[in-house]
Amino acid sequence: MILSKGNTLSLPPGALPIVSQTSGNNGFATLAMNEKARILAALRACGGVVGGPNGAAQLLDVHKNTLRSRMEKLEIRASEK
Image (cartoon, rainbow, N blue to C red; front, side, top):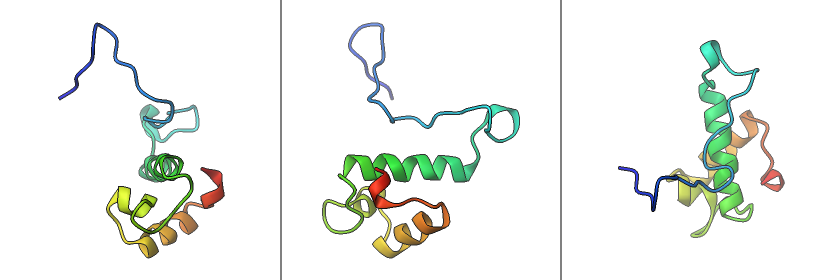
């Protein structure tokens, strides 16, 4: 369900991944691109904190070590937020 006041839906910057010319087949972002966008958005929302009660891992509902592993594979640094 999507709720909006008026006729326009406003989303905060970074709420949706950007699909670019380098996207996967047929203009769709690859799973890795979507995962990276979600992790970066969570890191931004948490001020770059990975673990702990206010960290990105909590927000994404994954263990902090799992998130760190995914970040390493996707070449994301917490400082990129």
